[in-house]
Length: 151
Image (cartoon, rainbow, N blue to C red; front, side):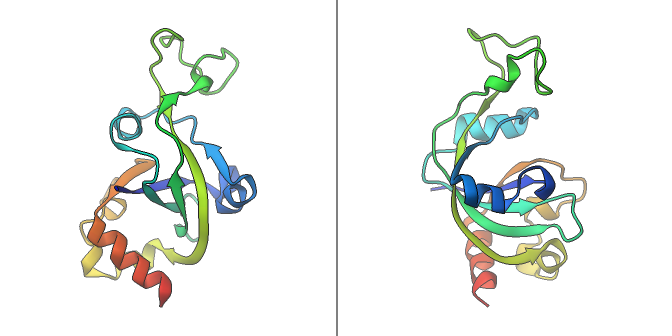
C-alpha cells in the first residue's frame, strides 16, 4: 500500500463534500507529475491525507482511500469545460484520474503544526515552492501524522 496527500480548496471541494458524496472522481488535475502518480502508482486501497489548501488554516483534515484504478478524465474532452484539452482525444486521452472514497474526518493538523515536527522535515508538502496537488507520503510520515491525530 502507498500513502498520499491530496490537496483541495475547501470552498471548491472540501472534506465535508467528500463525506457527503462518499466517493468522488478526482478530476481536473493538469499537472503531469500528479497525473503520473495517479496513472502509474495509485492503486485501490491506497490511503491519502485530505488537505485543505488556499484557506485561512491550511492543513490535513481527513483521510480518504483510492477507490478505483486510473481512468480517462472526461473533463478534458468538453470544449466548454474549464479543464478542456484540445490535444486530448478519446482514443488517446492525455489526462486521467482516480476516484477517492471518504474514510474519516480528523482533527485538523495545520501546516504550521506539521512544520514544528523535525520528523516531518522531508515531507513534500513542507518543501519550499511545492504546488503539487498530489504528493506521495513516506510510510514513516504517515504513521507519525496518524499519531498526531490521536493526540
